[in-house]
Image 1 (cartoon, helix red, strand yellow):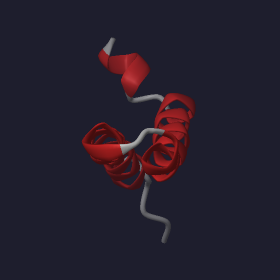
Image 2 (cartoon, rainbow, N blue to C red):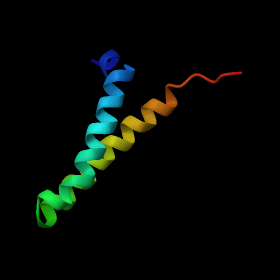
Image 3 (cartoon, helix red, strand yellow):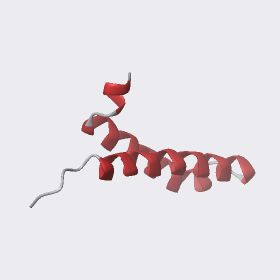
Image 4 (cartoon, rainbow, N blue to C red):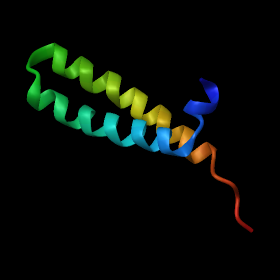
Length: 60
């Protein structure tokens, strides 16, 4: 499972999908549930983004 979560395509999917849902959630779901969904998906998206940045090799 760890090797699957470290693959670039999976990290890109998690980053982009969760970012889109985090932006759209407050408009689709009303109230506190929409805000909570946006925050939760945003945290997952940021985590995947950190994984993408951390996984890059330094060039030079």
